[in-house]
Length: 472
Ligand SMILES: [Fe+2]
Ligand SMILES: [Fe+2]
Image 1 (cartoon, rainbow, N blue to C red):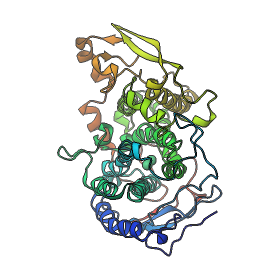
Image 2: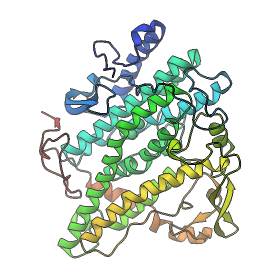
Image 3: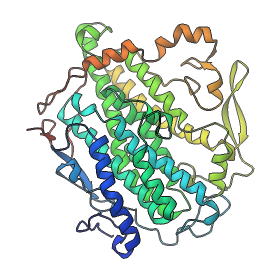
């Protein structure tokens, strides 16, 4: 198992020193990345020591070490999962051929676009979270924010490596452009809508990690099946880091739900705003918002692009190799939720063009598992409320449901009903201002803001009151 060479300027397990041209290209990009990080990375904490994990190998047993590091000194590097001897393409028209070690010429443009679209989300999320550190609910949470941030930075490195190593001059130009677009900038926005939404408060941050970053997990898992082996190996290691981001999102919202339940019992009311808690109704609105904008990231229900990515062998299904069918899907069908006038019905569609919807289904099932755990917390407190996921047609901007208005419980409704009700379903300016009013920094080790419960345990076996960020 190859370790990672930390004596090099760019830590890597890809023998970078053997490819001078590539090494020079990446060493030329490195200071630009650092400039972007100092500009757009966490605001105000760049000189502080943070208890972070850093990848030191790609071995499943102990791939990371923990220690204090100032974020600009973080060792962002290039780590690919170990090659699998004799790996074959497992789906599409090239099924059974050896996996490509180089870019197949006829798919060059398509593949580049796929990689750039994924790569663009990584720095975007760091930009969206630029100001959050200033209002952290605890040092533990502050550290988790920064851990996610540095790893999204590393994911950018992961994608830039593939672009620079395999796409020549075009790849290097794309690498530059990845540092030039800015989340929410009207002139040079990030590529996908959800990555241009601000993350103004910690409730939004945890919802983002739970819903939006989880889209990333599903996209990475599909690209990890790719016939283009370097992309597959890059994504496989990114998924290892991604598991922590899912944890941060699920436990973050879970701790807010828990604290809300405690306050409801203590004050015998569900109107918690006077008591400095986030009421369940507000949490529901944030779920509705973040879930719906994240559902859009999977694209249209019926998509010839998705079919082509699959047929070409570039992007598989979630857990492609575990599925028991022909992995070509030319004659298969898949059940897709569609509009039929005022009704939402499911219809059998050709499986190949339905791949976006299939991935969305896998994603929704995964979201539901986390939401069910939040609901169990509510139940344990003897509170008779359930937080449901909104219907997939609710508040959509992409796909067939973008043409109509759908309520969270899945009814097609009139514009008039939408206008009358949407303030009950989505966060209003008042809701956002209220949540913002709670965002007062808490930075004493072991102390937590009133609206969130402490975690069950600390990071890497450290106690909850550990000094996760040294502010002094
Ligand atoms: Fe990422
Ligand atoms: Fe992530």
